[in-house]
Length: 306
Image 1: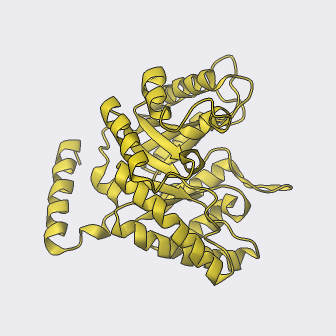
Image 2: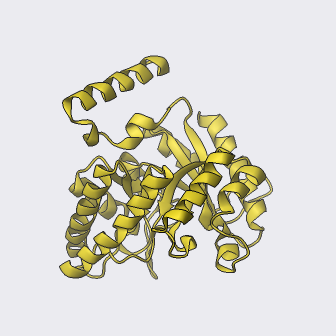
């Protein structure tokens, strides 16, 4: 189907579902994403985590730096850098004013430290779910489409899977009411097992719940690592974003430990398009150099596969 026809089809579909009272069943990204490009590039705030933890830059400065220094106008925040102001309306208004004036799109908030959504204790799991509500609210206020959460829990894989399906399911219901996606990154423990995490998302069975495949987070335990290419393959059917992790670069500008051509062939074969976030975590280069090299690498693979 041609892009123009598809756009009018989705517009008409949106009008039809609103008229029938079913619009909330459609994921926000389906209606909002213009899929002319294979992918658009965003910048993950975690790329500056050392400077942010050292108070050398602030959350309010991040979107301006992204736009002015890197030419990237889509940003992904990380919850600790809000410094507990995620429910402060004046702070959120200030951040929204900055991004609106700079022409920056607030895309995603990565949420950590709010409890385990796969906790085997039901009371603790419920508390974790409720702790995430304020981030859904903040995302909605800022105009984000998505929050990224963790499917964490301690215990046998099957037990944690059942708990995570419940935790994510209940949180995703709240996200759906607010048209905010709830997505899970492979982020250590059981969640770094691509087969396990894909089964969790399938079990939730909510179009507002999906995955954020990260190229570099497939270590299940100290002694066990899941194959990164298999992991991305497992998670792509549910992906509502991709995290392009980099650590090092060779003389040709490639990531020597992550085959980006292979990764993006997997992504392309999945018939996916959307937003790919830069997340530089190396130490050999400065964050600025690492981000720019990652951006160049992504532009290169986009040109090849787009």
